[in-house]
View 1 (cartoon, helix red, strand yellow):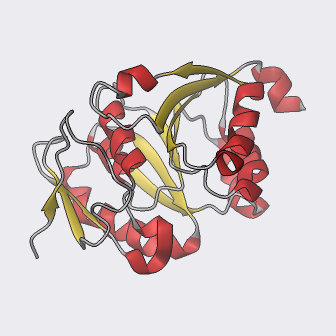
View 2 (view 1 turned 90 degrees about the vertical axis):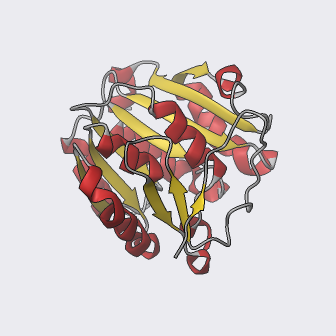
View 3 (view 1 turned 120 degrees about the horizontal axis):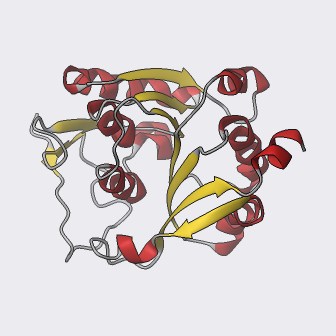
Length: 228
């Protein structure tokens, strides 16, 4: 099998489904060994590597992640997690049950390059049993890519982040702004509960689609948030 090589340059715009029909994608630009990502369109949105995941990975490639502890929510194909593990992070890579076979497959394809570690966990944001482990771990970063899709899940994501975000935890989020009615329920709780740093202009240096947005976030008042 010959993977489709993905190496976006600043002249290219991203398209949600440009590479959806490829079984494997190859990313030679992040490590000395090419990262291989498998896709599986049959399992739906969580089986595709979305533009936001690539852009998030490009961003975190510049972060010092060695010995950091990281949570990726809705990881799917897990490209950000794989790069973070290569850079020496301890990363908890999470998604719903139907995504995890693909997630684990991609971790296995690339684990020979890891300098850190990956712990793949089932995490349905609405299931309390799944969220319990979050209370016991200090996360330096929480990664989100293209998760603002189903507005009914906004409250569940808010609660999951409440359990994940400790003092000084930084959320790194990339998403595509498609339909206001879908995206706004998520942005409402971010703007009310977090201090946001908009990084859209930084992303424009290598990504020309204005609908793709990027921010980092820290809790406005950690103690109030923890106890409300």
